[in-house]
Image 1 (cartoon, rainbow, N blue to C red):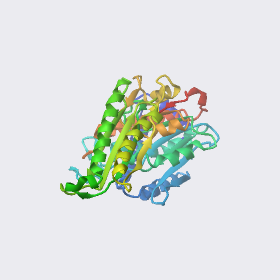
Image 2 (image 1 turned 135 degrees about the vertical axis):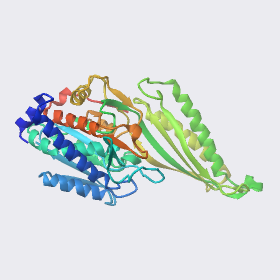
Image 3 (image 1 turned 45 degrees about the vertical axis):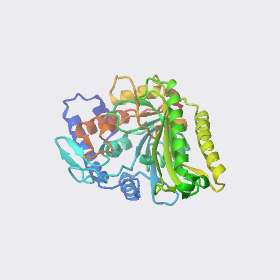
Image 4 (image 1 turned 180 degrees about the vertical axis):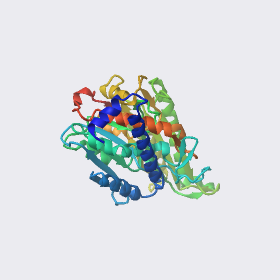
Length: 420
């Protein structure tokens, strides 16, 4: 398609045959790509290299070179590709390639085969978030023709579902481009509403070592489960104390602390010498993380001291499971206005209850919003789906974006984001 063709699409009346034919063709391509993407069982526990190979080959056929950013053992990789002039500020389109497991879920059809029923496309990852990924890839030929002055950066990560573990290296590479993006759009499912903010999150696992023994002689032992229970109570008290500071833009409107699991012990008459506790905190933008972490450390240190007083070999080891910042792009920022125009929306921006990789891009100094097709309420469940109409609406956003690539973007138009 020529650049004039892009302009014709942007200015055509809804009933013009050229527009209808182009939209139908692109939607068919989107559906076909989505079917291919769904066929890759990219659960986070597995390698994503097969889908990376597929995307690389697709881009190569369009004459676009993608760069891999592998994990430490090479079993997974992110992809970064630029369409258009690398020496100009551009727009980053961010998606993750991994999905959550399907084990134990009662699906009506094969979760790894795209299945259409009454205008809905079913399969694992359709909403979260291979639908957005398919829309982006389907519009690569359009971006190639349109991106004469403003580039598009394709940023595809791994292990987002494990707590945004694969994104930091990718974001660092994006921020280190010769000219960093002026804007990032993270295409998580928001029903194409523009989301400007979400909470941050950190999660940790405590491995508690005590000293075993007979329950009749518990004074000679050190109870690891009891230490875990003390920490659980302390974290609960801490969480309740944080509810006095609120931000009504979020639900719940306060920073939360949650203990998700505590395991230990084998028999009633044995003092458990081992326990494992996992907890998380979801933090409002602007939360004093140093203060919060100091309060958590004090709770753990007090339990550790009581264990050590009973057994010098006791201890508590701390492992970080995930840690990503929140997002707090100002409501009146240029980034919000720009993406709202692309989405064809006059609605006020929203906040999200779930976390995304957007906070990492914002922390790197790239103005960022979240906006993508699908509904998070359908994600992670059996019979996850996305509507063909939703893919078409996301395609319209991409066409509007293509229409902006023929003129330079000014980074000053996008307010620098706040982050947590």
